[in-house]
Image (cartoon, rainbow, N blue to C red; front, side, top):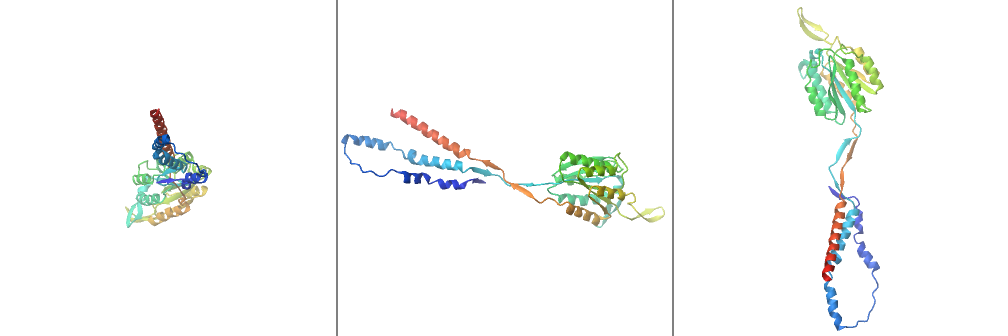
Length: 327
């Protein structure tokens, strides 16, 4: 969109007329003497008067000068920028136990990872404005997606995760340590780690509690989620038996990790629990709604100025050429 920064400058447009009106010399009376030989000279002088040079071009130059002072600009489309974003890393357990089929999802019983994928993808969509990353861990922790504003990429990577992709054990301590490294590298003061697992730390050489203490020193808030049903019917040699599929879940350690980092531990036993957990985290860590909007602008003042100088140059050259012709 085109506009002038100082549109009021054009109020000066009639200034030349006002100056001419107030500063014009008073009329004086002269005695006219008729000289026959001077009649031809007066006609020749009148013939040389050019209205283009005496009226149009001065006014055009004056308008262009005012247009330059008024600062013409071109405004591009508005750009919206989140004033302050949050860095958030999702850390997902891909150990072998995540294939346990004990989670209800829309009337069906599915494995734990399938339920996690369904809920996490919805959670990611609601984090518009935050920078998200994805860590997968089993035998070791791996950075699947660095911190990014591209939420579609995060959702795609979550959807493509497979059980056993990075091993069958559970390296909780390594996943926390990797998140710390990524948070520190990006130097954002708002740092949140959401760690989901169904077991205990059984791999890696980093103690989860020690990693949590280091996370606390770096102002990282950790929300831990323990997933798995409390009981399920399992067919055995002795018939159907009621078992606890989450017997290996180390809730004590997960609770301590959250406590050390001013976070919170959640227990997800079914689809409703997990959905409520991520909704709660959304409330505890709301997306910043403060948006800064600006419109890039391009200064165009040089266009009227250049045109005025070009016209002035043409006039000067034409007067010089005309002067040579008269000589």
